[in-house]
Structure formats: structure tokens, C-alpha cells
Length: 194
Image 1 (cartoon, rainbow, N blue to C red):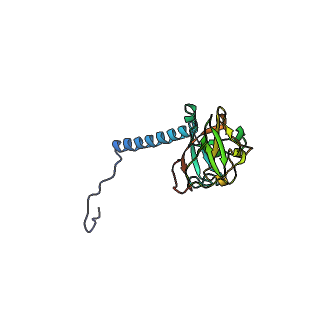
Image 2 (cartoon, rainbow, N blue to C red):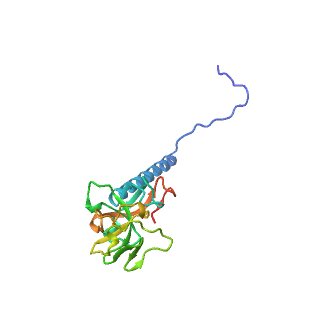
Image 3 (cartoon, rainbow, N blue to C red):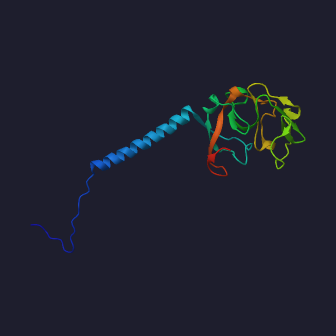
């Protein structure tokens, strides 16, 4: 004998997983997997992930902040003035990656006089820039040779860069690539490197 329930009794439909729902879920799974695979492949073969070490690129890039490096672009194009590049000083594979801004390219002259940077005899930047406390090897005019770049940290009074005799002008063969995206603990959090 069946018991009868007291009160209202509504018909409860059993939930059935349909084929269209399975196809949709499987489609999303494939899309997410393909996107992750593409991101991993691009980062592995075209890019490089590294961290900024030190205060030399502040305020734009901060100590410990992660950056993605485009290793591919300089296969076709040369670094330009204003690019933020990642390099190994003197090609030393045991050193950490340096992150600096290109201020002069091959064939140009560099001189730091009275705290002011001159490229090809013209003042670099504007009047609001801080004076450079130490000219280093750039106290005498430097003519950059073929494949040589002069780089400085944005925080040039707290930076080891091309002014240092142990780094000097950076050879193109030691440049790993162009910093193009930053993330982590920076002022803006994440975004394109400018």
C-alpha cells in the first residue's frame, strides 16, 4: 500500500543531461585549452618572462615587478630610441637580465655634461628631467659603433647602465628583446611598457 503525502504535491521533473549541453561544455573546454596552449606556446617561443631587479626603472617599473619580453621583434627590427630593452651585460649568461631604456642607437654620439645628456649634440628629454649625478664613461663623448646601443635606467641616479665601465654600450647580440608588458606590484598593476 502506498502512502499518500499530505499537503501540496508538485510534479518534479528529473534533470537529464542533454547532448546539446554536453556539446556546449565540451566546446568551452576545447576553447579554454586552446587559449592556454596558445598563450604558453607564444610565451615559450616568442616571449620571455622575467622580473625587474632594482630601482633603476622607477617609477614606471618597480623592483620585483614581472615583465614579458618580446624576443621576436628584434629579429626583424632594430631597437629604437625609447624602447625598453632586456639584455645580459656583456653577454654574461650567469648575470641577471638588465632592463633599461635605449637613449642612443648606432652611429650617434653620447655625452653627459653638467648633468645633462646630449645625443648628437642635442639635449635628450626636456628641462623637467633631473640632472644626472654621475656621467661615468659618458663624461667624454662616445661615438656608438655598429650594433652598439647606449641605455640608461629611467631612475638614472640609481642605475647601473651604459655609463658604467663594466657595462658600457650594449651590443645588439646581448639584447634579449623588448619589454612589452608589465604585471605585478607596479604603480599601475599591469599594462604595456612605455
